[in-house]
Amino acid sequence: MKEIILLIVLTLFSKISFAQDNLKQKINPAINFRIERMEKGEIKANHLSFKVHFKNLKYEPVKLLDLFDPLPIFFEILITKNDGDNIFLPGAGKLDFGPGNTFKYIELTQGKSYIKTLNVSQFLKENNKILSPGKYKIKISYHNQYGSNCIKGWFEGNEIPITVK
Image (cartoon, rainbow, N blue to C red; front, side, top):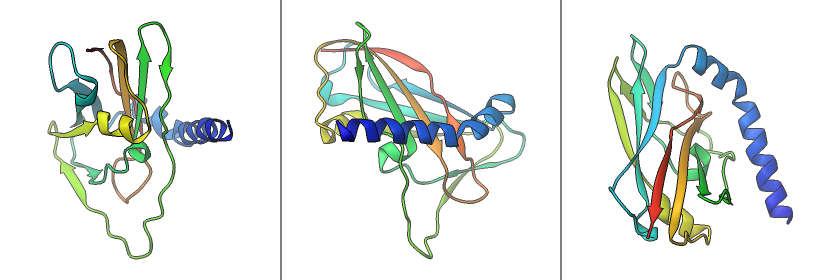
């Protein structure tokens, strides 16, 4: 029970800390973030992978931190079964990269995109979650607070329906 409360508190804190950046992104978004299914039709529970797209919406180049793991530090994954039940997954948190760590970046010029594949099945497995057959909605959001002179904030992704067989 303590773990669930801690998870909820950490998730709320993370969202609050990004609220100001998120408001700025809605007013003048630097990137468009969306998800796309890897497979068409029904998906096996152990083959849940999604493409995440980052597209530069600005006239000038933007930098994206070239770091996406561990998954819950940079992505929030919301899974809702058709009956309204949520599959709770850990999300948010902080990392200490240590002194002298140099980050790498992906530069996106105007209108250019970067696509990353996320293995959601592996993340579910690591958290002892198994999706039973049925219909679900999945929404993935990106959030970053690390690096310098790069995109930071909370970027809401689209929600997509899936059917697990």
